[in-house]
Image 1: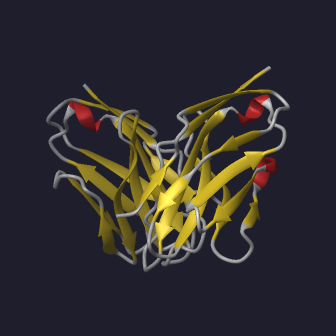
Image 2: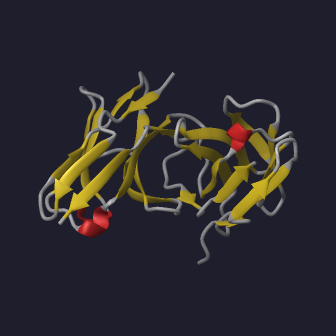
Length: 114
Length: 114
């Protein structure tokens, strides 16, 4: 069965510093990959997605991620974070096939400090 | 264009009662999925509907059920509520059927069972 691993439950970082949130997935088939962000008491908002093509994907709010098939990773990066980036970040996959079922990682709380 | 609407936003129920949650997808979206979010288990897939048919079901007891109407609106029902059913229930809609697109999430219904 497919699974998603986010090794870091919390990542503290100072404002304007770079950050990387790690995500690894396990799948023997082609997958679609996503990063979602959740602010307190809100639903999930898509940051970026990898469907096919270029392995470097750019998203909203200055975030980007790189798909690495050999390492089955999809790490999220931002060169300079802001206080407003403080939120929970979820990596997710959809296995290929006729489904929209998202399999989520456990989430990483990005805590940006002034 | 209006987003995904979930009603109600907050709900308090007593153990043993049943509850019905509603989700109106984005206009034109025929795929609706439901997720349960808890601090202990994270985001877990409940069901997926497309054109009134359940395509996938997660690993939840039979007390959890859902349906989709001809206008793509969806409801989920939980019978004989247990304390452990307290969670944020999220609905997502998609325009396609095979996962290669973004899922749009509602703000969720916060269910508290006392």
